Length: 138
Image (cartoon, rainbow, N blue to C red):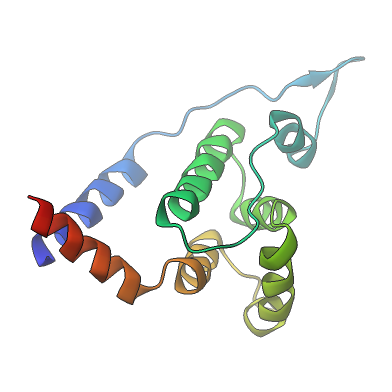
């Protein structure tokens, strides 16, 4: 199990070290560059309603990260865009959680947002159970 965890961490570290794609910001008619939020909205990423299906939970974060790389978003923009895409139960949960973790003096960063998000929707105990299930398949 530790081997899998180490491997996943190595892959994630390697992925973070890859150069980010620099994509020109989409010009708006009239030569005005659209704000990141408008570009993000036009891509139409999936919303997240809640639930604990690990494929949906991880898939949603991966989809957002792909969009963020294309748009070269700041940490704050990433968090704000992700929150914008939370609907229903997930949006309600974040409203209750936001005031604890996100203050004007200490705004939440993207990696911390993901930690909090995964603690709620794909907790460590569930990840361990999935790792054991995977090991038993092999």
